[in-house]
Image (cartoon, rainbow, N blue to C red; front, top):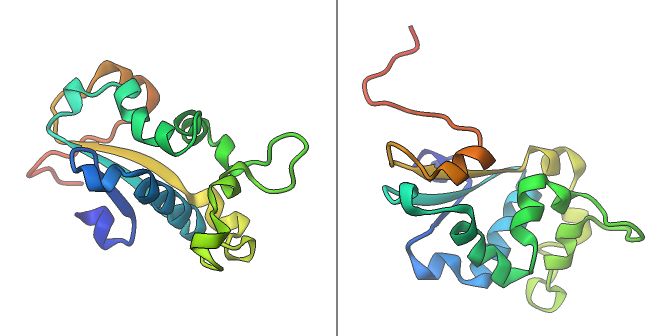
Length: 143
């Protein structure tokens, strides 16, 4: 809930409506535009969710999109192109000016992050290799 209250996009991996290609596309563009966090919430099922399963909804938006998110190449222009790769996700007819090129600036784009959230004690080893791990335990303090 903390990420949602902070204005970040959190997609529930187990709620089909959250992972519809249009929802995923808009969440990615919104968080790149705002320099926010795109969170993918696995709840307690993180131990059984590997990167291939996690990639599926992103691959439905555009093949290779999950890899582009992980290596951040989504934020860079491909060879011979002017605009960053993510701009290919913009549908000018549907989006209007909401995601026009003027809406994105480099400072906020560079703040964009992807986070996987789970309450599983031991997330899938595949995910542990791809993402940094922050473990939050109830009752812990910073003393």
